[in-house]
Length: 138
Image 1 (cartoon, rainbow, N blue to C red):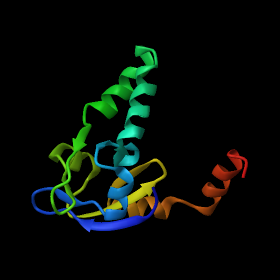
Image 2 (image 1 turned 180 degrees about the vertical axis):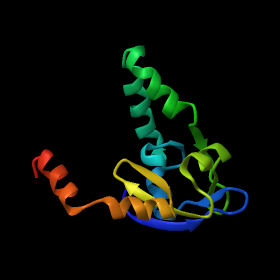
Image 3 (image 1 turned 45 degrees about the vertical axis):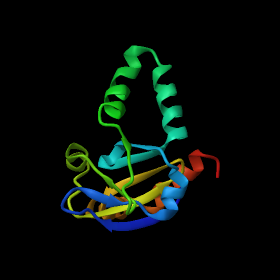
Image 4 (image 1 turned 90 degrees about the vertical axis):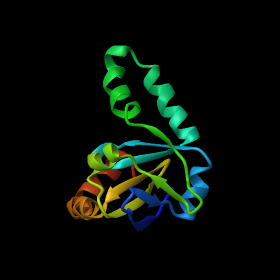
C-alpha cells in the first residue's frame, strides 16, 4: 500500500477510508494499535501472518506483543459511505480528534493524527534515511 490521504474524523468517530486503500485492504481488515502512537490497518491476509508469527513465539516473548496488538484489535466494517467507526480507546491512543492522515505503509496502512504525522516527518532526516538504506544494502 502506498499514498497519503487526509480526512476528517466526524463527531461520531467515523473516518473515511479512501477507495484506493479499500481496494487494497479488501472486504475484511483489522485495525489495532500501531507503533509510534498511530493505528495500523491490516488486510486479512497480513493480519493472519502477524497473528501466526506472534503465536509461534514462546509465551515469555509473545505476551507483550499479544497484549499490545490483540487487545485493541477489531474487525473493521465499512458503512455505505466507506467509513469505519474508530473506537474511543483507539482514538485516544493515537491522539485522533479531528484531522487524520491515512498512509500506505507497504503491507499495511496507518492512521495518524495530522499534527503528529507532520512532527514525525519533520524529525526524519536525510541522514536517517541514508543510514537505514545502507543497513539494507542499498
